[in-house]
Amino acid sequence: MARLFKKILVANRGEIAIRVMRACRELGIATAAVYSDADTNAIHVRYADEAHHIGGAAPADSYLHLERIVKTAHDCGAEAIHPGYGFLSEKPAFPEACTAAGITFIGPPASAMRALGSKLAARKLAVENGVPVTPGSDAVTDAASAKAAADKVGFPIMVKPSGGGGGIGMKVVESEKELVAAVETSVQAARSAFGDPTVYLERYIRKPRHIEIQVICDQHGHAVHLGERECSIQRRHQKIIEETPSTAISAEIRTAMGEAAIRAVTAAGYVNAGTVEFMFSDGKFFFLEVNARLQVEHPITEAVTGIDLVKEQIRVASGMELGFTQTDVTWTGHAIEMRINAEDPTRNFMPNPKRINRWVAPAGPGVRVDSGFGPGSDVPANYDSLVAKLIVYGVDRAEAIARAGRALREFVVVGPSTTIPYHRAIIDSPDFRAGKLSTRFIDDHPELVEKAKVFAVEPSPFDYGPDPRHIAAAAAAVSAIVSKS
Image (tube, rainbow, N blue to C red; front, side):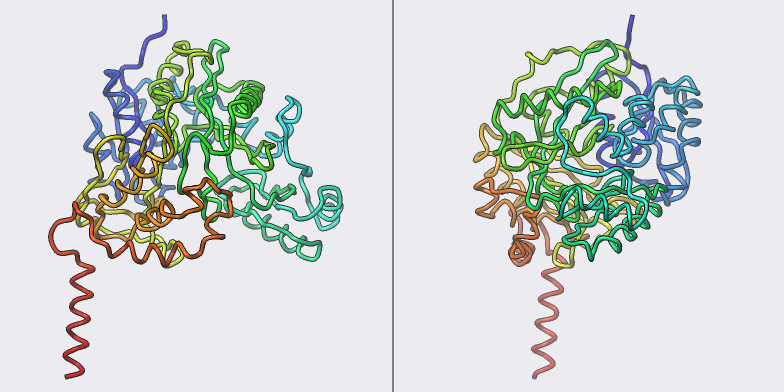
């Protein structure tokens, strides 16, 4: 008979490590944290029941050091490892190493990761199982094959690496004269970032929506989807705001997309939580890829379904059946997530890792903040710039938007520049409020940066003490006056 684990090692850091540990604590499961030199004083280290140092600040020396993490789990008696997202979470070698060490990996099997890790292989699997894809090509290896494929696909074209993600190596090509250079650049980027130079061509849709479907499958053949998330607002192919439900998706389309997503993952022998990503344009959806892990934006799905995805991940990994069927899943209200990054939106979102001098998280009805930082925390330059996820929930989209604006105004982070004022500008945008979204939203709204500058100097009602920015501005003004006198 299946039982829950007694101890889980969380092979990650920051907010996702704490998110997993919170679920474990509620389930009565002990947790082990791992940390690098840069995270010695991090909150996730203090939150866990025990913590283990695994190496230097560089990811390759710590959070990407697979053998060291698995050995740490074995030595501390952890029965399972939760990978979170990023780092090693989608590396097939990770579940394989766990199995070899007699440890359960809380995620999909290596075989499913391999089947879905290559975008080309995943496209082929989608086509074989009746999931619509955009017109595209097989791998292109030289100028001749690229030109021949482009003639069939038709311009405009997106050159895409088959492996990896995060928008790395993706190039939009408008005409044949740009094609060869774009393919060469994409190949170089793919080889450097992913160790796999394989690229292919795909028809470029100019202003699609980016819609993803959350799925979860158990080891007993049950597979359920939990609806869609709208992820269209992106910068450099990186999501910054997500919401559910999407204003563009009807109940009929949700059902069709959900069924397509289930076909795609079950064909790959998928188990545990995952996300199937689609492009949506003119009432039609097209398969993009599968993220074989828990997504950053999973909290908004939890908000509207009432299902704790991390707890379900743990239960499924322990061998239990899903506690619900497709007919049990309902969606109530509206939720929005804003990724608060330590970046300066007025300087092209340049990372701004610094110590956080003051931190006041928003609260009140319908507000959730997931973070691994607080007052006095250092934001390391070695990792992703995400410092918090602000999740709001309302009975409808209008209330969720109003709540987002209110919560952003309350949020105080002094030290690093953050995207809080930029999020306020987005939430205040008439097009966002009207649901007029596409993956080109940020490019089409350059005025948001100027609005963000205004919001950046507006004090929060929850701030306290003199703001160093205001002191500096006042000192500069005084200095200017003195120099003139």
